[in-house]
Image (cartoon, rainbow, N blue to C red; front, side, top):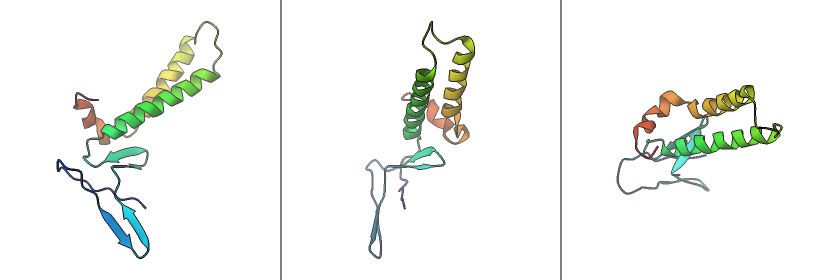
Length: 103
C-alpha cells in the first residue's frame, strides 16, 4: 500500500498512517498505470522516468540488431516509433510538465 501527500507548500511534508500493526509512510512519488505522480503534481518525475525507460528500450533493441554499417531506414523508423510511444504514454495527463524550462 502506498500513500502520496499532495501539497504545494515549500517544505515537503510527510504523513505516517498506522493501521493496527502496519505503518504506511508517504512517498515523494508513486506510479499509477505507468505514470509517475509526484507530490507537487508537476510530473517532473514522470518526464525523467519516461526518458530513462525509452533510452533503455532503444538500447535493448539496438543491441539485438546486426551491427554492420548501421541500421537501415526501416529499423531507424522502428526505434523512433518505440521511443515516441513510450514518451507519449499518458500525455494528456502530464503534457503541462513540458512547458517548464527544466523539462
